[in-house]
Length: 114
Length: 112
Image (tube, rainbow over all chains, first blue to last red; front, side, top):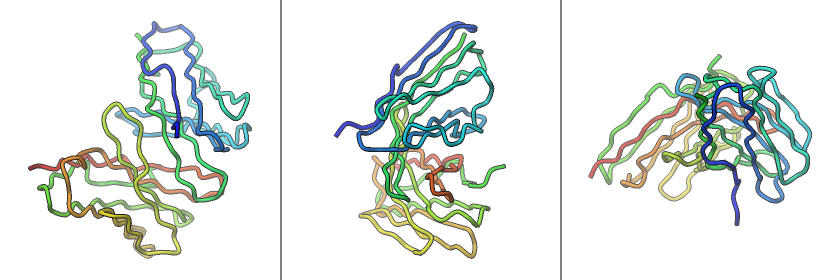
């Protein structure tokens, strides 16, 4: 079975550029979560969706960050304009419809903003 | 506000012995707890979970214990194997959406 798929795996870009991270959740999962991992803050939840609808975006650090889920099989996290402090590993995770289901993570996108 | 705490950043254990990882939480509304294992350059992998209605859950070499009165859970790995060397994250959820709060992680090194 295919797991959560994230692309790209690595992204290096200059500050000020737009960055788009992509995620394909596990088929049949109806919840999708975006996380950011840094040394200082660990794994922090940015935003999550249920049935393609954003439920809580209180973890999104600034208006420069936005996320969309146009359908059940695709989500994007966009940073515009990017800044060096956005450098981190970004993970996407999905979980199933029954309550108390574990989240399954993709392998992340390592983002470096120069 | 760190609601899930793993106070040991690292743990070294000999192969074949028991690894015990600890986790404390502050939010009494948490009712579902999980452990994840993470290798470098990979995403966290789900290991084992426990609901607040239980105090123990076992899956092969992995056992999770929950002490609700102390707001404490632990993960036991017996016997430890070299492939268990990884970072282990404790996580907790208390809402119907499955939103998770993660601890900072514990780096486990299993030595031969």
